Length: 145
Image 1: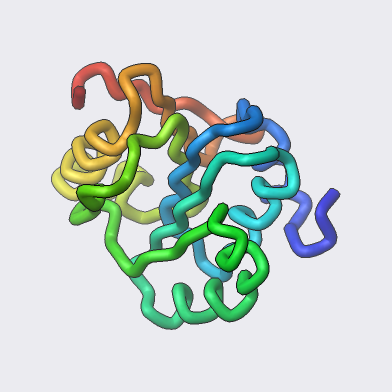
Image 2: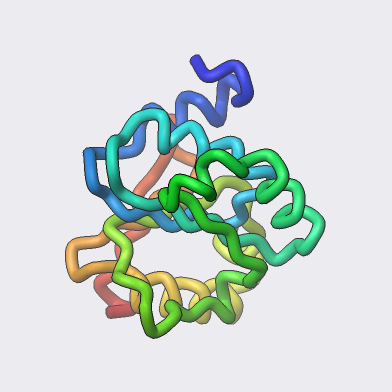
């Protein structure tokens, strides 16, 4: 287990179908602990962490300088329902979110916007995982592609 992750978050990261060279979008990255843990499990690849909180992004950046300098990790202030890839960015192979209000079923309109944005950011076979399973569950995106 990664000493910087809770048992629950460590189990979630360990259950993700990661592989070398994968491009991962973390939604609601907070301090970036999960993003850094993913980089420890893959070689090559890239992780982009987004969060709607400026404070969270600043904390993630401050704790991740080595990974950012390596070019394998970036962070961006963005809400998932307003997220768009930048022109120079490639699609992601996998997206995940843990404890993200826009994806917890309480706000269907925001959730639909978020799922549409996520589907646009993923490859045609890209997958979205959220918490709530054992330890994660996949959210089908076919209706949003």
